[in-house]
Amino acid sequence: MPVNKSERRAVGNDQVKYPWLDEGLAEYTTMMFYENNANAGYKYTFNGKRADALSAYTLFCETFKSSGDDDTSMTRASYEYGSELEYSYMSYVKGALMLDDVRNSIGSEAFLNGLKKYYSDNMHGVAEPQDLIGAMEKSSRRELAALFDCWLDGNVKLYA
Image 1 (cartoon, helix red, strand yellow):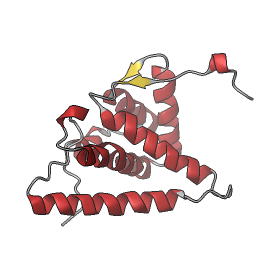
Image 2 (tube, rainbow, N blue to C red; image 1 turned 60 degrees about the vertical axis):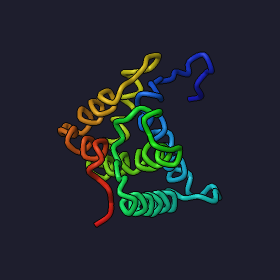
Image 3 (cartoon, rainbow, N blue to C red; image 1 turned 180 degrees about the vertical axis):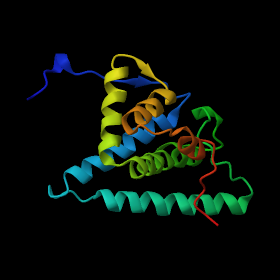
């Protein structure tokens, strides 16, 4: 059933304070669009976008590791990143990889139900990270704070 423009609802978030929540969700749902439209003739695929993100993030971490500046935490406000490049990799790329890891950990059905819950619980409001984490925990019936914390605190660096 088509949705009227007047029925459209949105979830806001503080993209300055929690850039990964805004940008990571945008990147990952874009990847999911390609996954759900695999036969539509688009140049991109979900697996291709995920592989590109993983290889780019790994290269980014290797580069930062060699410079001695390897803070890969995502809990920083947008203005606290050292460069636009660092902001982009932590918010867009790593944010999408984190959400893919969550989806792989809890399963696609629970992940999609978590996104729906996040949306319905926060429409017309301003969501925070705990809102997304809580929605995923509720839909999966699992504690996920440690998984999110690993990514958000910078413990997942993807290099040896």
